[in-house]
Structure formats: C-alpha cells, structure tokens
Length: 295
Image (cartoon, rainbow, N blue to C red; front, top):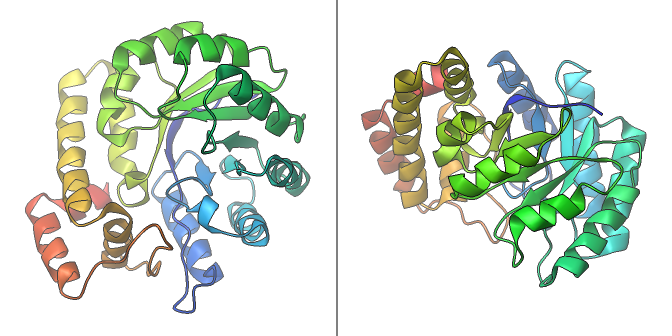
C-alpha cells in the first residue's frame, strides 16, 4: 500500500461563465501546480466543490487531471456522497480510471461511530485495489478510537485530519504503521502537524502558494523550526485576508491574480462583490502574496 508525502493542493475546480467545468483551465491549473512542485493532487473535496457537482462532472474532473498529470505525481479523488451507491460508483470509477487513491468526507447526518464505520467500509469496498484515506473533520465521535476501528478496513491507508487539536494529531500519528499516511488538512496548522509527525498536508491555499508549504516541510525535516514557523506566519497572513473576503470567492480571485481564471464558485460558495477584487489584491500585496506564490 502506497504511503503519500508532501504538500498536496486540494485542487480548485474551475468553472466557465456558463457554470460548466472549465477543462482548459483545469489542465492549466494542474500543470502550473506541477511546475511549482506540488507532490500530489486531492480532487473534488471541499475546495474542489465535489458535493456541488454531478457524478459525470466529478468523473470528468478526475479523467482530465489524470490525463494532464500522466503519472508525474499521485492523484487522490474524494468520492464521498450522501448517497452511498453514488459514492461507491465514484470509487469504482476512480479505480478503473487509474487514480492512485480515493478519499471520502463524513457525509451530513452521520452521528454514530457505527454508522460512520459502515459508510467508510462501503465506500472503501468500491475500490478494493486502491488505498483509501478518510477525511476526518469534526466528527461526532472519539476520533482516535474511530481511527483504530478504521484500521480494520483492508485497504484503509490513512487519513486527512482537518482540525486544530495538535495533541489529537500526535495521538493519530502514533497509531500509524509503516505504510499509514497521515495528512494534515488545516493550512494554518501545517508546521505544527509536521512537527508532530504528519506525512504531509492537503489544503486549499496550496492552490496559490504550494511552494511555501513545500518549504515548511523541508525546513521541519532539516530541524530549522524557526524558518518553518516564519513561513507559516506568512502563509497565515495571506489565508486571513482570503477569509476576510469570503474564502471560496477570494481564493478564486487570488488564482486570477496569478493568471488562472477559475471563474466563480458554485453555491454554497459566493463570488466576490463588485470592487472587492481590487481591495483584496491591495491587501494581499501588503502581506507579500506574490512573493509567496513565486516560491
């Protein structure tokens, strides 16, 4: 079972002005991020708005990125759906299309560990030959106990843990066996997760500054924690500005500043209002956004 490492953008899905998946820009974005040193791509997650797309659209995104990447870096696709048969269908398609791994969110409405385990077991079973990573975000269960249970699924290969509790992150990394991958999913805590033993991070702001997170990991591995923390503080200043303007719309606007027109987000994301792009750009320039994007 593969172990994955490094800085992975949770890839934005570009949309056209008529609200279709923008294939040429998706290809351009993937290529741009490969050239910036992205270690892998995570498709159709929260940032990629997988839950706001149809199944054919999600399959199209995976097929497009797989073709563009052509084996240069690993591709993981998020297959979670409220409908279990649809999630299994996406998992099966990912395996047939040649993805390197699948993942799934916790769908809305799941309140018990038993129900969550049954869900993840069913989805993982849709692609038994692929590594499966659970996307753990604010579950209504004991996270560490739940991960112990998930390790009984035969193709379970790790988790994406999106949470600020670094004590819990350390407990999770201590559960890891030799081929178990632990990704951190909270961009603002990347350096601390790396210090506690994460294999890498998957995040939204890696679409605009993947090199900065790559350098955080390199600095941590060298033991240069001061530089890693300095880079994290720089990244967080940029992230805070994006949140101030409405994250989903602001992230796409920031990509536009880099020459990548990804269009407006789909609901529940909202585009920036008229005049906000100019103000956002000015505020991003103050916190050295373009220098961070150049890394």
